[in-house]
Length: 160
Image (tube, rainbow, N blue to C red; front, side, top):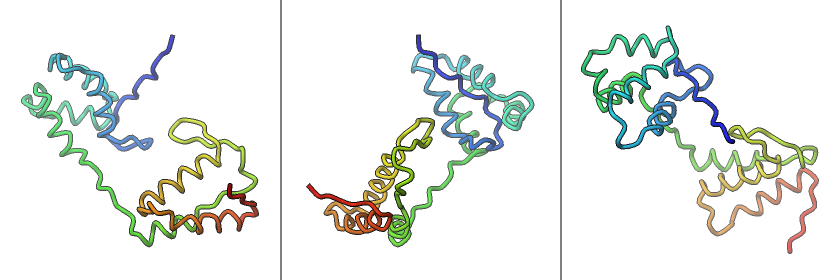
């Protein structure tokens, strides 16, 4: 029988890399469209770490924000606004691609990626793929650069 890991309580202070909106959406994902608002509000309150910023904030909300789910989400996003995504420039992406190397000693090793173990060469290939996608290299013009980076590390390439 599979058990899901329990969602950690929300502190409200960005500790341990906790992202407020991801936490909120995970909590909200446990509800369906028939879940009563009172149940949502109860579970929200019980998912706050006792004595921490988030619980103190919730207890000091006006009563109208403690009984309406949409109003709660609105004040939640005011308190914890979504972080702006900063997009890298084309030059920054190219620089990162040029610096992305795969070392021989790491082949067959494992790295942790988003809680999963993956081979280092797979993580490297995924990173290169993400960079070339971001650079919009649909025609493969950056392939020689990637080959050059691989050769610099002593790998022999065979094209089939």
